[in-house]
Length: 278
Length: 278
Image (cartoon, rainbow over all chains, first blue to last red):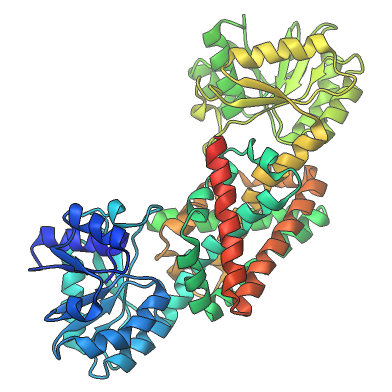
C-alpha cells in the first residue's frame, strides 16, 4: 500500500531478488498508480484496498504515519488469516500499538527502513535504495517470532541489514538523529526568509546555509505527521537542543571565549564520533 | 600573511593568472610555511612580518579575524607608502574600523571571499577555489576609490566576481546565512552527544544529521572568533531563530497541525527561493 519512493523501491528490489510472485500497488492517487505501472514497479494497481490485499501473503504499509494507523484496522478486516503485515513508518510506538490491536494474533511486524532521499513519488524509486541500509524492526511481546523472522528475511532480500530494537527507544533515537535535525533545518530556513530583506540575504548564502537545504526541502505534510506522532520524544530532545543553543548564546553574550571553545570542540568531537562509526 | 587554505589558494590563483611577480608567505607555523614552500604556493616564506612585507605592492591578511585586527597596525608600521592592504576576514565592521585607523590615507580595502571548504591549511589550497565565487569588498567613506579598483581587479584575476557592500549590512547578512547555520550545527552535534546514550544514538544517524556534520566540523577557534567579533548581529539573528524554533515547539505541543504545516511550507519556500537564485 503506497507506491511512492519507499513502496516503489521495495517492489523493485523484491522483484529483482525473486522473493515475490505478484506485486499489487494499492494507492489513492491515479497519477502515482499510472507511473508505478508504467515504470514496471508493480504487476497491477488498484485504489480498492479490499481488492488489493485479497489473497496477499504480505501487506506492506508504505504510506505516511497517520495513514498507517488509520489503515491498519481496515487491512485487518480484508486480509486472509495467514497474511503478514508490516509498515515502513518513521515513528514506531503508536503504530505498533495500532498494529497489535488490529492483529492480536501477532502477525503485524513494525518496521522502519533507514533509507530515503529528497525526491519522493514512484518516479524516484530505485531497486538499490535499501542496499546496505539498516532496516529496523520493533517487535512487541505480542509479535510472533515466526512473523519477525519472515519479514526480516524479506527486508534482507531487498539488500538491507535487519536490526531489532525496542519501539520506545527507536522513537527516542530517531527524535534525536532525524526528527530534531529536520526541525532545526525547517526553523533555520524559516528564520532566514522572515528576517528583514531576507531574500536579499539569501543571495549570499554559501556552504553554511546550503548544507541545510536538502533537509528543509523534505515533504512538509509527511514531517508534520512525524513530529505530531512522535510528539513527546521530539519535544524532549528539542528542549535539550534549545538549552544547548542558549548555552552558546550566553557564551557569546558574555564574551566567554573559553566556554565557547569548549562547546565547539565538544560538537566537533561528536562529529568525529559520527564519522568514525559510519 | 597566512599560508592556509585561503592565502595559499589565492597565491596559487594569482601566480597562475600572472597577476603577481613574487609572493612571500608570512606565517608563524614552521610546518605550514614548509608545506606552502614544498607545494610551490609561494616563492619564499618567513615568520618575520617586517621582512615579509618589505617592498610589497599588496599585503593580503589571510589569518583569523582577531589576528587581522591585531596585525593591521603592525603591518602599517612596516609597509611602504604606496602598498595596498586587504584582508579576507568573515566579519567586516571591526576590521574595517581597525584598517581605517591603521591606514588613514585609505589604502586598506576590507574584503571577504565567499569560498572555502571543510579542510584547512596550505595542503588544502586549490588554484580554482575562487572560480565563480563572490568576493565582497566593503569600502568605507575613507577607502580610496583607486585602491578598491586595484584590489577588485586582483580578486577578479583569481576568478571571483567582485561585489561591493556596506560593512554593517555585510555582517548582518553573514550572521544570517553563515554564522547562524554554524551555531545551529554546533549546537545540534553538542545536543546529540550529551544526550543519554548519545553515542549509541549516533549509530543510527542517516541523512538528517549527516547533512550537518560538514558545518560542525569547521575549525572551533576560527568560529569562536567570528561569533565573538560579530556578536551583536549573531545574537540578533540567533534570537530570531530561537523564536522560530519555539513557534515550532508550541505547534507540536498544542498538536496544531495547521500551524505546523504553515511553518514547514514557509521553510520549503525559503529553500526554493535559495535554489532558484543560485
